[in-house]
Amino acid sequence: MNKIIYEDCLDIIKNIDYEKFQNKSFLITGASGMLGSYISYVLKVLNDEFNMNIHIILNVRDKNKLNEELLNDHNVELIIQDVINPFKYDGNIDYIVHAASPASPKIMTLHPFETNIANTIGTYNTLMLAKEKNVLGYLFISSREVYGEPIDSDYFTEDGMLGYVNPLVPRNSYAEGKKAAENMCVSMKDEYGINTKIVRLAHTYGPGMSVFDGRVQADFLKNVINHEDIIMKSEGTSIRTYTYVADAVSAIFKVLLSSKDIVYNIADDTEISIRELAEVLVGLSNNQSKLIMKIDNSLKKGTASFTKGILSNEKIKKELGWTPKYNVHDGFTRTIEYLREDVLCNTKVMMMKH
Image (cartoon, rainbow, N blue to C red; front, side, top):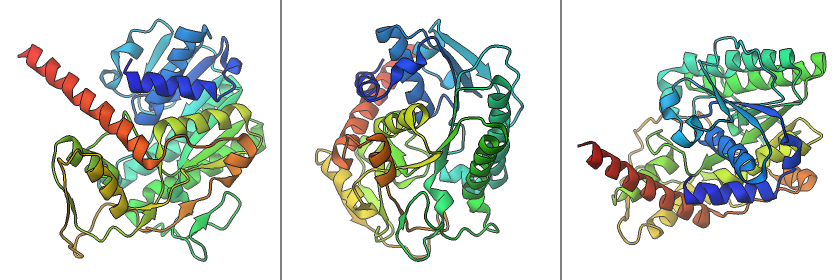
């Protein structure tokens, strides 16, 4: 296992009530994605280092996207299918984390219909499986996009006012799909008593993310890894928070295992503009990259139709004692180290093949 991911897994385990997973069965959808794979690695380390005897069920569409360490683990079972198809599984399932969802703005823009059904029908199918198996816990990974564009405040709390989302904008299929899925989760809990949970994530990054998915942090990382200049075509004034994946996964486990309420925001403490983020990454490039401004106000990107809004993390900090460990500088330092090692390993593999 990669050194950084292994260290992250141990840090996560220190901060969760992992004994509840002893001899349990755990299904993760979207297991080849950044969040799904990190959750899978944590469960693997719990088995390997803490003898938890967890049966890990990984749902993916393409098993070739999984790391060989997971594919070859005797505690791992695969369900290879799209989540928009009903699940047929004969064994027991104690916990489900539904992490399968398009994460790339490019996909959301080019395939808004498929994006919607992945979040709606996919959630329906996993909730029906949770009901069939009478699971101990079900967690849906939602998004800050459900809040939309803020109306009277730049900060969103779980019990506060939602902002505006125009359902007639195709790109908003992601936000609308997540909103419908959240309603299914609370309805399943209310009507059938299933212990459903929801986490709304702010921008999340770290090992396992794709540098080709079209998000600004991915674009910046790709530039730094390839020793390219970061070229910004806007002023980059939008304020965001960026949460390191290990901090996000630690919060996910805390919500699944220890929370009393149903919905929690997960967001870092640091508010930073896109331009400031670019400057941080330039500083981490060892003078291999520069920041170049080429403003082009005519460009239309595949971003959401809302640009403001910061998630408050006060609820999860107060109720569950969660605090992010990594600030933007340290989290992106670890991510760059991982990506450089990953590029080096892939280069060596390609050289061996030829």
